[in-house]
Image (cartoon, rainbow, N blue to C red; front, side, top):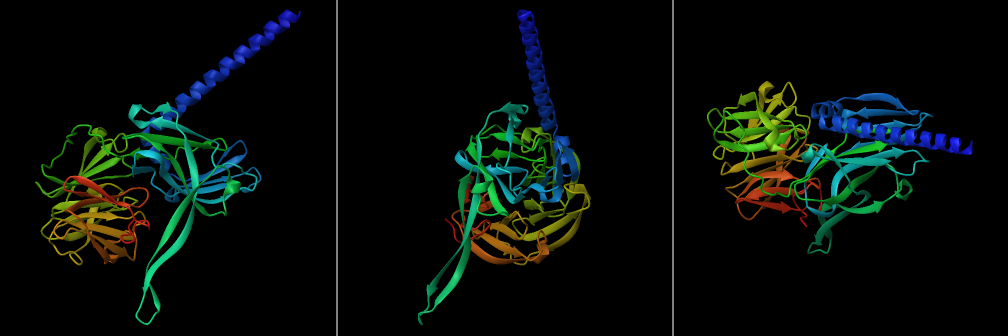
Amino acid sequence: MNKKILFITIGIFVVLLVGILIFNSRSDEITINKVSDREYINKLRKTDLEKVEKEGFLLSYKASEKELIIESPKNDTELQIQLTSDHTTTGGRVGSDVKVADFLLIDWGDSRETLIDSIDYFDAKEDFKPINREVWFKYATEEEICEGGKLSNGSFVQHNCYNSITWTRFNTLDELPHKNIKISMWTNTNSGESIEWIPTINGFDILQWAAWNISEAVYDGNNNLSSPITSPDAFTFGDDGTKAYLGASWPNNDVVQYDCSIAYILPTCVNTDKNISTGLRTTGLDFSDDGGAFYQINSINTGTMSQWNMSTAWDVSTATFTWNSTAGLDGNGSVGIRFGSNGSQLYTTDVGDNTVTLWDCATSWNLSSCNPIDEIIVTGEPRSAFFNIDGNISYIVDGIICIMKFKIRYGIRGRK
């Protein structure tokens, strides 16, 4: 009798174990299918959610702020957090202890111990194959530092102030000094990797977040984009890397759009026949963060900046001319244009004067509100300009990528 009970018990255990393994396998397969469906992911990231229930917890998502709010079964705030970096961060370095995402941690429940329950990682370059990675989190301590000097009368004059940030690692939320705090995610990175990471919080798989691309380059061959233009002068990605754009001077001064099935992977980009002729040579090209406008510097000769607003986000075929000006540009070689992350700072590069110029914009992403406020001279001829997650500017000089680190994010003075 005892043996019979033992065999039955073992049988039940085996059935349960097989069921668990099958369930986990199916769950992994479902997650992979969702992550690899980029159209689904991109739509999810742009769609608000209102109190989706799971195990008594409620999840809301505000797409415009990339903000998650999780409420407890008692309707108290369990977690409120914003992803403040892009859905896909680029430009990070290869090495140990590299920052790959930024957040604003607004609020959390008093009984909550950890930020995230678990994270799944997927290799975007290997058909989103699950991989093992390790990440850690740090919080920011900011201190305003002002530099200055003494006048002949002995008085002290401040002439340059900036915020200095110190990052401190933490494991549990009770280690944080206060709420409404900037935090970041760090890891060890490899050259050329593209990693999608999906956190699980209170049973919710947060597919709205996110990925990192490490762009320290390893030559991967040429990719000839099928294009109606023959002389491309400017290139940029948009819409979290799912679209690419070429600007050119021949034959029709077009800006040409491509759709990319895998974000930031150039061989997956195909021409959509969504083009626009701007009438001017495009040597620099950038987009607003919501895809509602694009900006160009028009040719080495005229040094004109232009703004085009689009009725459909990221679709250049719906663009209409909004504004242009030569003010602040000397026309000797203005070829690069790039906004900072919040649209209140603009940067242009000039190959004639070897300068990088900082513009202050009274209205974010509105080119007509921008005025030059600072300029630095660099070695060589600076062309395309771009930023990494830390707000450090990079520019291309004579075929070499140069990086300038600043004490203040998206600044131009106070260089490290």
